Image 1: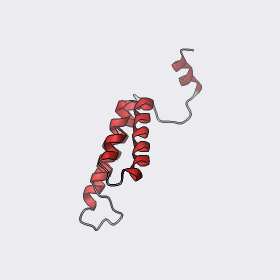
Image 2: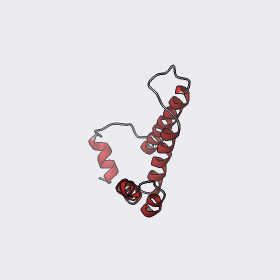
Image 3: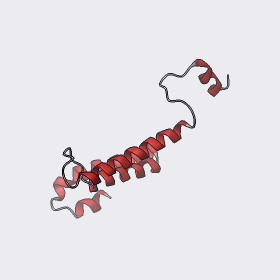
Image 4: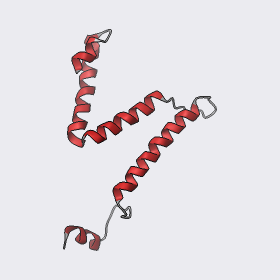
Length: 104
């Protein structure tokens, strides 16, 4: 895959290290965390790359960037809420809850 990316570059010698790092990082994410997390990461990258964001809310293109940011934040919040499965969010659980999960 790195060879295909480097063959299309204007200066392949300068592009090889960065392409190798990107491809190896993508493969590491897929093997470590799975295909779903890689697809989510690529989708977030697509949103942030293709929809311009700015710190100046008066610019004419700021609304679409803020909408993309809101959409990614909403999907993240929904995924987090779904992963809790009715449990309360807390960094420290009480002993009864831990013992019931362990079957004690």
